[in-house]
Image (cartoon, rainbow, N blue to C red; front, side, top):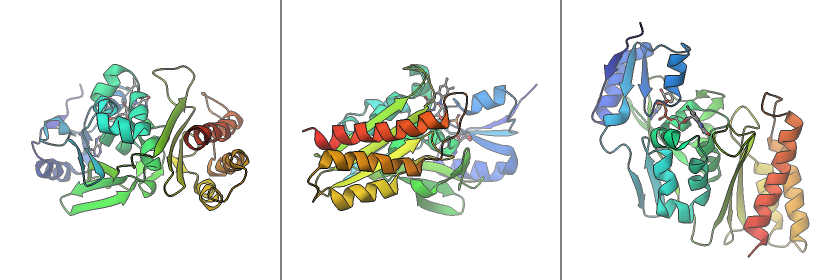
Length: 286
Ligand SMILES: Cc1cc2nc3c(=O)[nH]c(=O)nc-3n(C[C@H](O)[C@H](O)[C@H](O)COP(=O)(O)OP(=O)(O)OC[C@H]3O[C@@H](n4cnc5c(N)ncnc54)[C@H](O)[C@@H]3O)c2cc1C
């Protein structure tokens, strides 16, 4: 019978000490919605489980000086329901509302979603479009990394074995900023994305951010498409045509595969059509 040793730290300092002490045989557990599945399937059997659920203050959501900060334990349900997030970073509220079922959203955490590094992770697609930073702690100290550089491949991050995600933060978009999130799946709920898009538009600076899930080994940004938009939007005399050109260019960021959920060809088509829809909604409609 599988009987891991449980550690129940009460503070972040105790948590990182427990992770360091457990070494390679240890694993952090937050909501358990990903990890418990792997343990049940016998894919993973850590000797030590460091349970973060009792860590004080680790689930807080704070907004100060125009910066939003989620503690690693903030759940999808809490983020989706947060009034300021809904108002000013609607794409993230929508992404969190699209995760699994109500049960998954009330247990699953943002720290777990980021650490799990699925290319289909809903919150990550939105966080990539928001240029979020990931706050990381270990007994060796703290480091903060842009989310764009955090992922190396499916399930693989730059996180060392003794490091903990303590939070995720980003600049709160301005009151006139627009955002867009869509997840295309085989049905409307409790589904892994075939393709997801998180997008933002800041009319003041004429900048867009376009991020995609499930089209590459990690969530990706369509930077060439963003640059084309930014260089042409202000002077364009045919903005609908520019939107189409940006959407065509966004496809270059994707390197999709055929899998059980969809073909690479369908995913490529979705990247173009979702980009066009997002820009039409955010930039062309008043
Ligand atoms: C039925 C079902 C449906 C789902 N649907 C979706 C979906 O639609 N979209 C989606 O994106 N995800 C989905 N998921 C996946 C899952 O719910 C999310 O990834 C969730 O956010 C994971 O958070 P958690 O707290 O449960 O992580 P856990 O399961 O506790 O941990 C996941 C991994 O992250 C590590 N970890 C957790 N917290 C930290 C931390 N703070 N620092 C460092 N490492 C950490 C753990 O060691 C483990 O490796 C689904 C899962 C289930 C079971």
